[in-house]
Amino acid sequence: MGFHDNGRQSTKMKEEILENGDLEPVRLTLLAQDDEERQQPQGERPPVVVRFNDIADRVMELREPAANMLAPAAKYLAPAAGLVAPLAAMFRPSFLPKTGGKGKLRATAYLDGLRGFAALMVFCLHHQMWAHAFAGGSMYLENGFGFDGNYYFGALPGVRTFFTGGHFGVSVFFVISGYVLSTKPLSLINKAEYVALGDNLASALFRRWLRLYIPLIIITFVIAIFPHVFGIGMTFKPEGNLKDEIWKWYCDLKNTWFIWDTGNRVLLDYHQHLWSIPVEFKASITIYTTLLAFSRCTRTARLWGEIGLWYYFMYIVDGAYFAMFMAGMIICDLEMGAREGYLPGWMQALAPLEKPIFYTMFAWAIWWGGIPSNSIELSHMRATPGWYYLSFLKPQAVFDYRWFFLHWASAFLVASIPHIGILKRFFECRFCQYLGRVSYMFYALHGPILWTIGDRLYAAVGWVNETHILNMPKWANAFPLPRFGIFGLEFSYLAVFFFLLPLTLWVAELATTVLDDQSIKLTQVLYKMTLPEKPAKLPAPGEKGPGSPKTEA
Image (cartoon, rainbow, N blue to C red; front, side):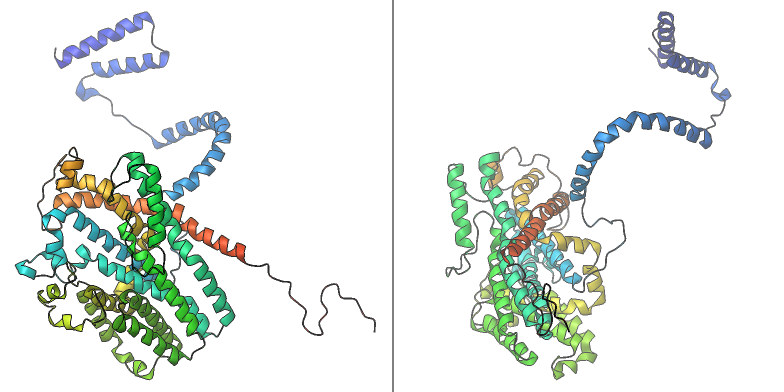
């Protein structure tokens, strides 16, 4: 049956329906109009003219009946809308533009952006090493360019930061923390406001452990019960039952997070990426006690004391992490000194050379931030082109040479950025500020998402290892994608990477709102609950207080 036969059959069906009277008048009219148009020759159809005023008039006619019909429902929907609006705001990425214009940035906003970008580099490192683990990823990308005759684009100086710059990112975290934790106390010390300094340090020290660990307690608990509740494996071997798992989780947390543990046990079985958090807390105490110890010293004596403590951590004991925090404090003190005019004379004399100095520091930071990190053996570093002579700079006290060079790289980076306009503006952009806001939860949650969703997606597109074949054979090569592209930027890798990146950021945004922000508020409430009520102000000598008896002249 051809097209025209279908038309005749349709006309016959319409006639039968009309005889039975089964259609309402409106549809009868439409059918009649359709028949008239079908009978007209193609060239004789009248042009269709639609006037905007006619449409507007018709919309206005329908508006009032529709409003009357929806009025009863609106009364019940209004409370629901009030509940939904905050939830919708929670799911909305904070880097999207908001009404009301761009808010004013803090003076140290670039540090927030730098912290967020450093968290992104940690994300890149872990994804590169996870997907390319059985393809020689660490050997080819974490070693220097030209090591053992291997020349990969991702191993080039500077470029390697975007492939394997995660360790550089962690050292940047530490220097930024030393800077930020010192900012308010140093400003109070310079103003000789010692009562306010005591209040500030007491509040900060009370809240620090709670602020760092409350979100992580919840996250690690979910990770611990995940295999038992959902049947999805993680990076640890689960216990036989949920009760034993919860007990092991409790013991693991209390032992790992005990700050005076002399065994230096920092790796948490349930989330090894969180090794840096106990370091963060220990170094925070170091910063607070140092500020208090030097608070009554002269500015010159305080600077020398900070430098001496930094030297102790870096060159006398194996305390590179704490040296990074001290470097952040020293940079903060020097920045304040430049603004308030108490820098040492020899530093003030270098003011005309500011640009060359800070551009050189930035270049040095990018170079040393790419320290070969496939091994902690010094011989491995010396076998890498361009690093042989630098290896002799490592102090005897430093066990892992990588953190010595990363300390200098991160300190130079943090010190140089505020003096290089284009870099400062980049880290103050909306996206970097967004990364800075969610950086803590981004750092804490990118691992669990990689181990569950990411592991399966990478296996599905072709990045398969023997554990996939043994434990999840259905995911192995489920929908393989081509691997064309340079090493570390293959199409199949990037397809999964750019799916997981926004997903992880979105989950981090939710966790920041639900966990991190609420833990900060909770610690503030708990601290205020412990404070005594402020006593009533006593009248000055000779001054009559309220309720004093009146005396007559």
